[in-house]
Structure formats: C-alpha cells, structure tokens
Image 1 (cartoon, helix red, strand yellow):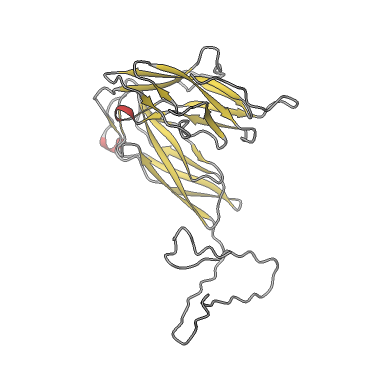
Image 2: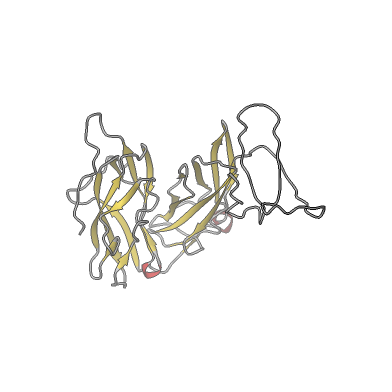
Length: 302
C-alpha cells in the first residue's frame, strides 16, 4: 500500500500505512525499486504510530467580511485530514458582533473535505467597534478515538458594514404547492423536511436593484451546504438560473435514499452582480416510515 504520498505532503518521500495483524516483531525492508544499491545509497526510515487529526481553514467569498445590512455573505470551511481521520468535523463561529449572525455550526461530513455557511446582518445592524469587529473566531471540533479534539480555525477578519446598497438580494421561500415550513420561531430560519428518497419543491426569490441580467446559482453545486447525497434536481443545461427580467423560480431538492437523518442549514449563492447569498433555511432529512416507497418523486423543471 505504498502510494508514494500522492498528496505530496511529505515532499518526494514515500509513505506506508500498516496495521499489524497481531502482536509480534516485524521486519521493515527499504530498497531501491531498480535494484540499485551501494555504500552511497542511504535511506531514512521513520516508524511511528498513527496520530489521526485534522486542520481546518476558512475563506470568505470576496475575502473581506463586509456585509450589507439585511444581506448575507458566504464563507467556506475546508478540512485537511491527517493520518486517516475521516469522521465528521463541527465548525463553530464565536464572538460575532451584535446584529450579526452565522449559519453555524457547520459540519464537514464524514469523508468530505469542505462545507459552506453564511454570515448575515440584521436590517438595522450598525458598524461594530474595532475590538468587537475582530473578536470572532472559528473553532473546529471532532471526536477522535473517544476524545474531543478542538483546533482554532481562523477568523473572518474585521467584520464591517457595507453602506452601498446591493444590486441583488436573494432568498429561499415557500413555493406554491411546495414544501411547507414546519418551524419558524421569531426571526429564526424556516425549516423544511424531506424524506430520504424523495423530492421537495422550494422557491428562489431575487430582489433586483439595478441589475437586470440573468442570475446563475450554479449546477451540481447549486445547493450550498446540502448533505452528502442530496442535490438540486432537474437543473437542465443552464443550472439553477433566474433569467433576465424575472425575479423568481421554483427549484427542487432531492435527498437520495442513503442520506442520513440530520438537520443542515442550506443557502444559495450567486456570483452575479458582485455576488449575493441568501439567508439560511434548515433542511431536515428524515427516513421514510416503514413500508413507504423510497423512490424520488418526479418534477418538471421550469
């Protein structure tokens, strides 16, 4: 199982992961695959136990957390998995100024390397003081071999208010005849339920402010932070697109039969007109009742 460290984390060196089948003594032999040898052929061998771990980095779309009151900006968390750790990683954002919120915790699922979230500001949010603006930090946590492991995962930098009105605002809303929200407490996010193996219908609404062109939200990555195995369905060649001159469209989310039960914050992001993200809604995936069909329903793309 010598993969020559395809990620090049060890430079040009090779790496071998070996699980001993039983206690005992084992012989490690290092040699040149070409059969070359001699007194000048020297190799260094480091043998150590596995130390499963991870590191998480954070990036903000646009690089600066400058947010228009009433709107949102996307961030991405990415995991570097170390020594075979492949479990889930929870990322929390702490220390946000008053009037600012985030769709955290964001969970990087087992076997995955990244996830997305949004930071958003209330309509009446004001610019925070300098110390408050810089107090935020990401903390990543995972359970490894029965113990909790936490690491600092960067910051958003200094959070500020963008006084210039955005050219676009984006929202996920209830579609006529589509999925109905099951929970909305106060100003909290809407929550929609989808059964594993089924499809629900939602609505994408945009508010234009001087931008009249088409607004694209992507293709296979259109649903931001969807669970692994769930996807925006019936996209067609143009992906999730609001055409020029229109302000809304329905879209469909399908959860594959194997998606685990969970709740994840979902949002949409476009790069049009300088970029815009929606506030999050919650997507709750549930398993179907025993005996019910698990084939996804059909829906026609608009």
